[in-house]
Length: 492
Image (cartoon, rainbow, N blue to C red; front, side):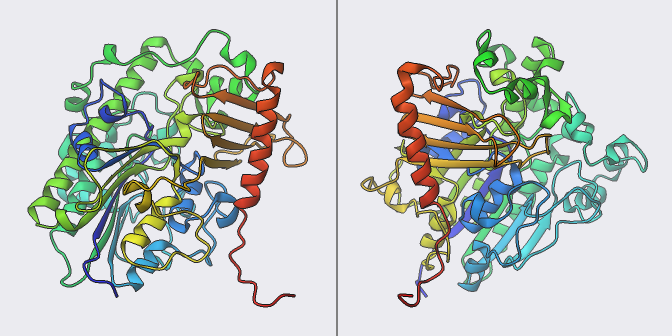
């Protein structure tokens, strides 16, 4: 076994846009710790997830496979038992593995915990989210033990917030979102991560995944963090009059109601309410940044920072009013598919590295295994980011793929979409028969001229050649992404 393998600290948020940090262009963001982390390592400008919804995206992370190959195509679908998690491989290689917070590789809309898999974790402190009333919610156990009065006030024995969809209906946060900082879910994640870091197992490197639930809706943060955000400094949502007229029909439905009609939509809010949602979103990020700073300070104080690969990212983005939509769904704009990615690896990555090449979430497990001197995962489809991190840009892919297969709340008819980002162009296909009963349609964007994806060029005659090129490239990418990992043992 290789010596001097790094610890690996993976800090993951939920529903965080790629443009939401100061270092990624949000001048109004209060993110000094994450900005400093980016200055000390590498910032990826174009990291794409394989699905814009939690479970399928996270399944791609843990297996290193595209959605079509790992089988968890939608929230509410368990990851098939035969799919191996990269954490199991790390544990078998001698890593002390821990998971804190949300994992979401199985249905979670019950009062029970998410079932454990053969995951390799020594520490498994699970809490799907701050409002999730599972009896095994470790955040609730901690809050009940440390702040029983707050727990009793926020979670009465009987009440509307026992509904697992309670937070989807909330318009301005829920009581648990606005509790004092020291009792917040994000603080609990940091507390448990610090405890893990402060108690290393001698002779064993560690892998820790610290999962924050914010900035997932409902949109609310402790007052001290909301007070840090200047709502007037945040630009208005990106859209143009009549934008939805030239987009596929479901876009209008997702403007009227979010989450396939199960949550309030953009059109249910006033302009001032949307402004406040956006301010609360960045208040939640400010809290995350504060808690990330505490984790990184503890890592430094423990003397392990120089031996630790730190990665910060998120499972998907948030529409946040752009294109007259909120939350997430089959829309494959960069708002949902592009996420932050920061990597710090002392001695391996030059400081202030900036990488524009498109990378994918399936590249993260490949990178973790590479750093740990493990063999690539069987069937893994990602590539280690180490060559890019060390300036070797030759032969890197020029594309990214994201697939939505009625992955969120179900619609009637069901919706399937596929996105290809290739160089500075993006194609989004809204599938029709025989894949699903929707009307076949598509979107085409020139990101070099229209980075906000406002102008759909797909049906314009002058772009027919580019449309054809992108469709042909998508077919080739989908053929390449098929799972052909089974060995061919004989000629026939």
